[in-house]
Length: 72
Image: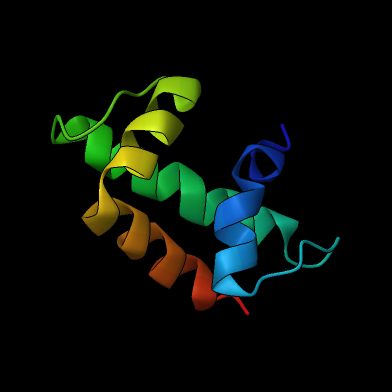
């Protein structure tokens, strides 16, 4: 699955350009973050819902963008 395509805005804000070399890392960061947050009840495990929930929560949005910046 190419889940990183759903989160292009975050990647752009993080300064990350998806490539063949880093797409697995991008997906891993997103999977891990949403998995952790949903296990704590902070967002839905459903990716479409989680994206909307994270977009509305500035703290969570900054967290995931920060984690994505580490890939750049």
